[in-house]
Amino acid sequence: MKSWDNIAKIALSVNDGTKSALDLVNESLSRIEDAKEYNAIISITKERAIERAQLIDDGVKAGKNMGRLAGVPFIAKDNFLTFGSETTAASNILKGFNAPYQASAIEKLEAEGAICVAKANLDAFAHGASTENSDFMVTKNPHDKTRVPGGSSGGSASSVVLGLAPFSLGTDTGGSIRQPASFSGCVGLKPTYGLVSRSGVVAMASSLDCIGPMTKTVGEASLILDIMSGRDLLDSTTIEKDTLGYVSLDSDLKGKKIGLVKEYFDDSLNKDIKESIENLIIKLKAAGAEIVDISLPILPSALAVYYILCPAEVSSNLSRYDGQRFGYSFDKATDLKESYSESRARGFGKEAKRRIIIGTYVLSSGYYDAYYKKAQLVRTKIVKDFENAFKTVDFLLGPVAPTQAFKIGEKSNDPLAMYLSDVMTVAPNLAGIPSITIPIDMKNELPVAVQLMAAQKQDRSLLGAARKIEELS
Ligand code: GLN
Image (cartoon, rainbow, N blue to C red; front, side):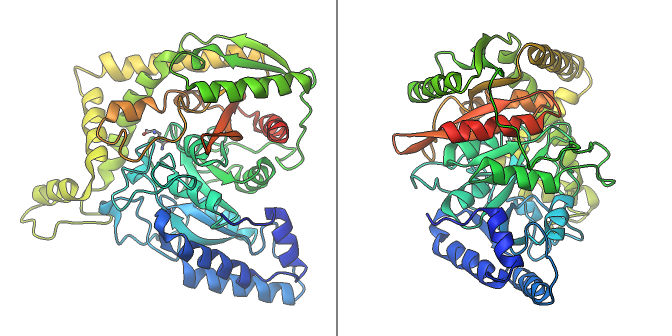
């Protein structure tokens, strides 16, 4: 596992001419080539990356400042629309799809000089927690090739930990940034819902989807958030960024109240993870934080609510893949109906079909009131309970998942067991609050991480506290 300089430092060296963007891109591409056995990468955007690197190097030579991310290579999960290679979302149905425009997040990063070098593997359409649902290949955990890197942003997490690029982008609908960050050992931030534009990202469940950075350090995640966040006319759900931005952070925990979520510390939690968190708590107290136990009795319902609302939105969002508009189309169809059904039957993988069927069922007349409507009501209760909790504490702390990275194949034939690995990550998506994964320990030669949550729009203070946890770990 090779490392990179801090992102801000790389950009400074490119801007002062001591490093060339082209060398950085070539370094990243050669690391990607060397790490092929991990199956982290679906495609590279070599030609475009080299062109952009040359433009940046020429700009520097002409005396211009090329931005806060000048020449910094990065890897985007393959559900971000990007130029330079296909965008597949790791699904056969999107093979051969070339994006007509780029995701707003990518545009913002490029405007600061960052260079996308590759697209990372994921569970197809981001449905999953291990990358085993990718239609193409299974990504391996950077610490143990027999284990999963987590998912669905497993390729993005693995890429950062292997040092293929200084940062990557992920998406998080129910934990897909935070859980792979925890399994693979990097920082993963799911910002407040709406803080980063979803425009140009393949939609999974639109009321839950969030975009965020995966990095080696909290400070680097803050910089990337600072650049990607804010209102975007192409996504009406976006909100303004914090007027103070996310770069200069307040990391002082003196007098801050951190709630330990009781429901996340039950018997299902792995003992090693529990022990690592207990050690962290001792250090947090020494740093001046007040630690209190807090209970959110609604939390055990969050997973059931998620697995009704998420498939409902998935079934609606996936209706656009009909063999007519995007990607794969069954060319032997004799009429439109056959084209729809055969294109979808052949193009979608097992998990996408499962979610379409569940989603259509919970939305169907007769079952809508019993499932979808009820789940919406419980979601509102979850939102309220978090709001109330943040009236008494500044942050909530807990594990990211009940276990460390599991073995490849361990849960792939048991969808319910796989869904259970999301039990600690789905609630922040339902509540729209920011949440971050911070690696704190290594146990059994695998990473252990914690999840820190804050109230909506408190991303700045969340990042400050996360940086302190990083420092103490
Ligand atoms: N693992 C969760 C699921 O399968 C979350 C996925 C995600 O956040 N994209 O739905």
